[in-house]
Image (cartoon, rainbow, N blue to C red; front, side):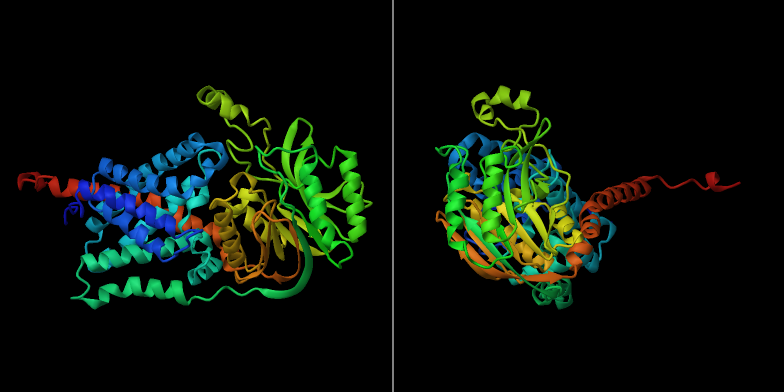
Length: 521
């Protein structure tokens, strides 16, 4: 049984290579969006982990993660300063570093169990890809609600590879990308130029990524949607008068008065009051709905009992309140609520003290029935949570309407990164997406990911679009949860089993042979 290989790179080289890998991976995401660089970033990371000790793998894993996250979420500093930036990037770095050790263990153990050529170029890349996917899923769910902002598959929103997500979901796309990269590395390590068949797993995986078409959905007509980007003072630190954001949205809606439309969509925080408890605002929405002769999908903070929610409301004149509501499922820690406030307030009292509201997670479905048309919903960062998107599709969504408020991140990559995620969701589900922001950029995205219409950032305007509707669920939606389990969460028990078998083999090999007499009965 072969012994584990030595590190491919000395630590003096591994650290700068890991740092470069994180920086290169960030360039694959918007706004730069050079999507092929995602493979380069993954390759540089994996090369630093092969043959390392556990401590060494955690060190280079931390270097890779710190480089990536400090660049990828630099937009946090726009208004909030460096403390939240370093805090969030630091948490993601520590967790990523710990998870990097599992990638190293895959490289250490599996070749000892399957030392043959096909074990190296097929089974090993599969386990490495599964461990990478498990790390993404872990970071996307813990601590608190997690932070799935840097998932590898999401880097492909402008790429032809994005269509694979409609078959396997975003996690499946991440898995496939890492598999191809890891298989290519192993083929080179085993001198593929001498044995060309060793390239088959990497080549076949690459062909699957490139050639698989988008999973088909069925044309279900269209819906005439008006969507308004008011460009009002909707940031945490914007100076404003009472109802200034509401007025900006009303002003932005003026060009749609007299137009024929099926629904009017406003962004997250488009109403800076509770339309359920504030009757004057409720009457203004009634008047607007009556004037447009259409229902409204609006958003504001609502109070029900002792709880505050970030709420989307389906509103129609004469209904005496909202027809339906959806509360944001994953309020943002340190933005919309403060978990363990006593602890974090002791660390940064001035910063934490600015967050006065404590939003409660919603439990109602992300779905509205708008005059017989199923509308899937996601409020701001909820777009990055798979279960919110899948729930909407399973409820019967024929189109998605995403409401967001990017005002605290004006002029940064955050807006375009989130817009890329919205585009991925359109491709994954085979549904159109209307992504409307308070301050931009807002877009109407077709089921194939192409842009139908858009409003630039920092402008007030209205869109009026016949948005295509689709029915039928993609394989990515139907199989998505199972794919996550098979290609992600099962990596850890599989890795643990590999470790147990390696230890058992070592113990058997080290055991002294029995004496002849001991074998006699």
